[in-house]
Length: 527
Image (cartoon, rainbow, N blue to C red):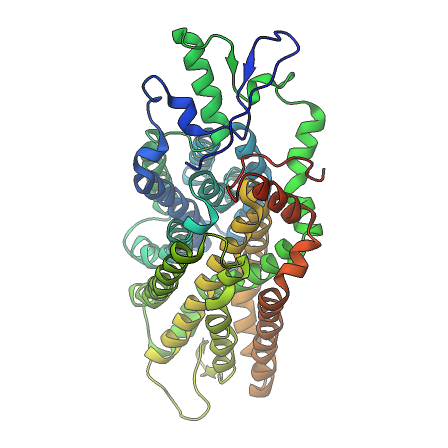
């Protein structure tokens, strides 16, 4: 973990007592005796893999549900397809609020207990869905499980615990990859579940997956510096090594007040509404994620024109997953070059806006992917309506064509997600969980809405003249262009925008005071 300046202060109750400041050096904490057990520094990548697995499991819960919709309609009399889709919508909508509620608490009480508590509640509330006697029980379980999901805001926040901004990109890219894979792997796995197992197994496998991820993470240590210092101070007092030393949180009396509770819970919302960096990048990520979840809902009607069955439609999600890996590895040359330059010219040689540079080239893939989707028509016959993409220039194209363009959107989705959170983690440091909480809120909120409009959109457009299809999809492509535009504004005018950002500016000042090192808690942050 990063070095921080050591500072001692007297307490009101015991003037001789020494307090470990939030800006203390971790190396000082472990000397002169043996270091505390289970330090996360011992194997950071093992820790990241366990957290990445949790992120995949949490997002898998959102992406596997569309496969159970036809089975629920068949099992529960009177339930419509649109009604069954509310289980997807309600999970994502509650998920977006769950991210906001959990994120700041991880900054106060540590990442480990929050992730463990979150997974425990997810598993508990998945049971009502798996054992549901009626659809209402499924909705209740999905809503509570979504609200219990800590999600990416906490897993991304721990990157700030372990790495300085100049070192964070490799691990952050890995965590973002895990998050993206979780949102698309459900389509691949959900097909075989739908084909060979009953509808309850859709939820049982969610429970098994999340339980396994939680069990692996259980053996991982805490990463939040203030919590580690609290534990080290207690250890020193217990062993008699230093009976008058206390951790930063131990000196807070009470540990947390009602004012603190309001401040903690309001912080992500304040940042989302008042920080232009958080607002614009969150809207960008949210719209991009909505496209991915629209794909989850639309793949069945799209590939029906090629007579794809349940399993073949599931395999159609593989290009999106492959696209995420392509996008992930495409960043490596940038990372290596940047690390080399920083070693030669100093850690602060590049401005934070450098982290958006690859996005300048990759983000246009999103509107390009949508612009090609405007060249569609709906094919129908007297017996049934087949919904999907087909090219107006020929009667029929190979099924690989829509897969290629869905992969393009997947590449753009990953790069938008990674570059935006990389920029925010670098700008907001220790409060990155709150900043990325706004990002997660937007992604899940827009995805939840798309779960309801995606499939009806294709059905309704099937009753419209072909030009109406072009107008609707052209609108989506135009919105993509509009949402992508702020990337270029932030890249060229980022320093001026950050100067007007209260949180980013205050944290930058504190970082300068510590010699360019990331701090654990900034002074005089806005309430």
